[in-house]
Image 1 (tube, rainbow, N blue to C red):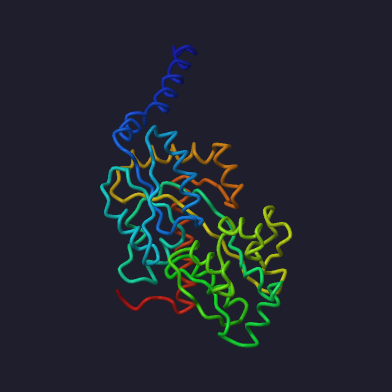
Image 2 (image 1 turned 90 degrees about the horizontal axis):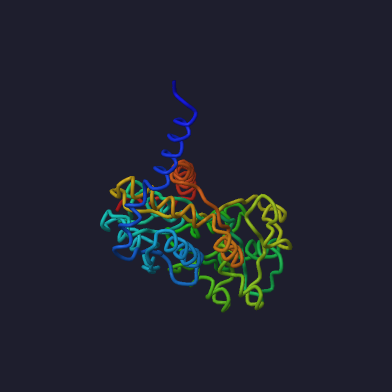
Amino acid sequence: MFSYRAFLFLGVAFLVFAITANEPVRASFANGPLTLVVPFPAGGRADIAARNVAEGLAKFLGAPVNVVNRTGAGGVIAAKYVAEAAPDGHTMLITSAAILSAQYTLASSTKLSDYKVVGLVENTPPVLAVPYSAPWKTLRELVAAAKGDAGSLTIGSVPGATAQLVAAGFLEAAGIQMTNVPFKGDADAIAALAGSHIHANTSGFSGLRSLVDAKKVRVLAVAAPERQTMLPDVPTFKEQDVEFVSGLFLAIFVPNKVPDHIVAALEDALKSTMHNEQIVEKMKNVGLGPTFLGRTDSEKFLQREDEMYLRLIKKLGLLRRSD
């Protein structure tokens, strides 16, 4: 007869196996540092998130994780670098919906199928901000000014990245025209906004927090269904008669030829990172929206987002004709 003691022994044995199954893989990471590539300049949302995530991954993998910014071409330079890296899990990419939009809007871009997703680490609604000295104190005032002189006002944009689509989506929803000014990444656009070199910009709140506190920029609206805890006094777009809701995510990717058991080890370390209270609080304190979706759920999420972005890109006439 199969005894309770035998059942208990098998249960413990299975648990020990589950805990230690990825230990040899983790040990292989100790042979050299890992690299987390950011496609945008230092100081932006992706860069800030990357440095927090890298700290956790280093702790749970037992190896240093270096954050490297490879900017340019709307994220394509960094994306190609990672896609072509050795399939050993040592080179990762942290990026936004740029990985989806660039494949449809930028020539020579990589495709989503060139990667395996490790997990989603951040998701937050974008905000619309203007220079603090600007005459518009509400979204309604900005929209009225844009309607009064179509194309005279400028708005920041990162070609091929989420920022381009968020800005385009806002303009369409508001029924206005503004002149797009291209930047390499959020950090550059935000710096231009703070210096009053552009009239408006859409981005995550993390890169704006210190500038809001210093009264360099003013946030007019948040693209969420309801007001956010971190911005309780900022109304939504909908509250100001603009039907616009959007989201900004960040996820970790590796080349598609990385073996599944290595991806699983990275996923375990990423999960531990995103459940670490200190790291989560650090991310929240700078205006990020830390979250975690594992590989399977992230794949489903990305498929839905990919379909949505393609529809929007076609609708806005941003689909490239050919490479």
